[in-house]
Length: 150
Image (cartoon, rainbow, N blue to C red; front, side, top):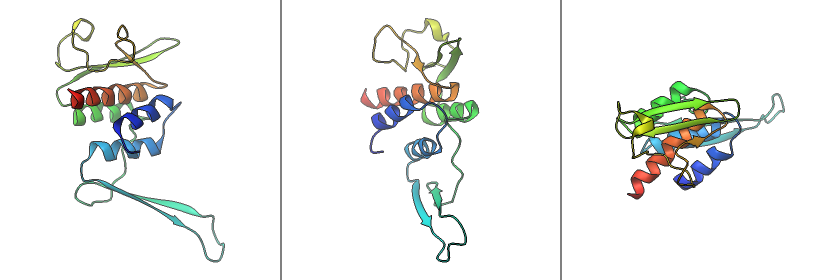
C-alpha cells in the first residue's frame, strides 16, 4: 500500500483480523522498517509451497508483527506509539462497534470539542469497524492522517 489513505480504506473494508493489514500498519508506524516475502517451493514436491514473511524493525531485527486488527491490546499500543498522549474509547451495541480518540488524555471524550477521528459526515464523531480492534485502528490512523494534514 502506498498511502495512509489506502491503508485506512483497507481497514474499513476488513470484516475481521488480517495479518497483511497488520504488517502494513507496522510498516507505517515504524520508520525504517522493511518487509520481504519469499515464496518457497519444494523441488521434489515433498511439501506444499509456502511463503516466508521477513518483516524487520528499524534496526534490521526480524520481528513478529503485532496483531493490531485482532487484539485490542495491540491496537491500544498502536495509539500510544503513533499518537502518544491521546486518550481513546471503544463502545459497542448490538449493531455497531465504534472508537474515538481524544488529543487531551484525561479529558472527557464525549465533551471534548476537538475529536481526532472524524468520519466523512461532520455530525458523526466515531469510526465504525467490524471489531473493537479494527475500529480503534481506523480511528488511530484517521487521527494520524488529520494530524499530518494540519
